[in-house]
Length: 193
Image (cartoon, rainbow, N blue to C red):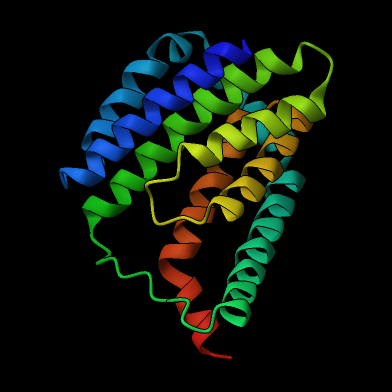
């Protein structure tokens, strides 16, 4: 399973690079993630996922809190260590951007958490599985505007929450929250200090 994870990460990294190099927006990435998650989607019981989300709503708010703290602290640290660190997100928020964020977040969680983490964690070494998955998740984000360390920490949090709750919807909502928080609120918060 680790081999499959590494191969998928490398292929996703190439697709993300091609998207950014040819300025295709993330259309190739979305198509690739959709195709990759199609088999997994057929096996998901949406009724059960909704039940798990409601049952574990505490973890949803806990993950929102941890993600908020991680994002803000990471960016404050970057500003203090690198004074020229640019806080500006520099993205025009349009419906197109929000739709891209939605689809990428959903498909990344289906593939990385629901498929890879669930299969890797069955090997009974959850910490090693979380570490390897988070490293791969970070590598897959190398050609994006996200910081690799920040993505690693968020992936680590989402992986722990997923293993604790087994709720795909919960980690999808948390991932969406992280992306939308950065898009809409991070710059305002950092500039207010």
